[in-house]
Image 1 (spheres, rainbow, N blue to C red):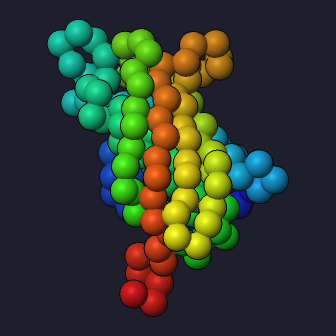
Image 2 (image 1 turned 60 degrees about the vertical axis):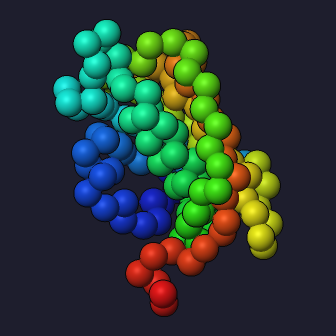
Length: 137
C-alpha cells in the first residue's frame, strides 16, 4: 500500500472517506466511503449532489497522490452519470488521472459496491493543477 499524502480536512470524516491504496504506475487511488444517515434521501439512496462529492474526492486525491502531494486540482468542470440508486455503503471509489499537464488535468472516478460487482456512478473532471492549499500559498 502506498503512503497517503495529505490531510483531507473535516469533510473527509463527514463523508466517511478512508484511503485504501494508490498505484503510482497507473496513478489510480482507491478509497472507501460510508455515507452517514443525513446523506440518505427518502428513496433510500445517497443524495446525488453528495455522490458528486464522493467522486470529486476520489478524483482529486488521485491527482494529489500522483503529484506527490505538491498539487491539488481546482475543478473547471465535472460531468457525472448516476447509474443506480447509491446505497449508504460501504462504497468503494476508484479515481484515476487520465492526463496531467501543466495547464490542465483530466480525471475520472467510479463508485462501486464493496464486492466490485455493481458500478453505481462515474464521473470525469477537467481541472487546473494548483499548489496544495496551505503549502506556500
